[in-house]
Length: 98
Image (tube, rainbow, N blue to C red; front, side, top):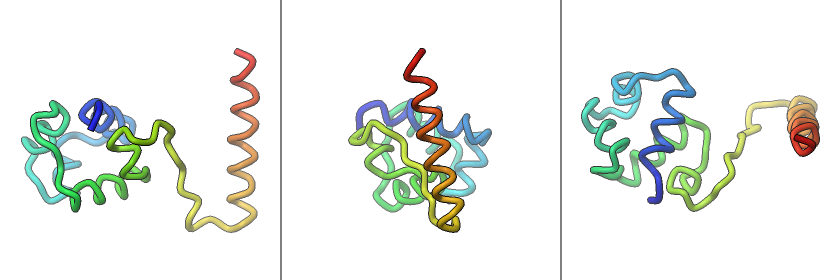
């Protein structure tokens, strides 16, 4: 669980969630979320799955086993999913020149 706490805190802040709001969604206390972020405790498999769902990432990403974030395209039409893929490709090309 390399850097799990920092990754969790970064994602929580990106979603503009407080520790209390995340705790409420997970069904745990605010102090448990704080312990996770400080890496003093690690989540159970059930909580890990909930975190992955909340932040729309894989459990492998949360655990530091995958180094790239993924974006779920579920719920999008085929045309919308293709549009997102094109946008990602365009942004990667644009940023490769920097």
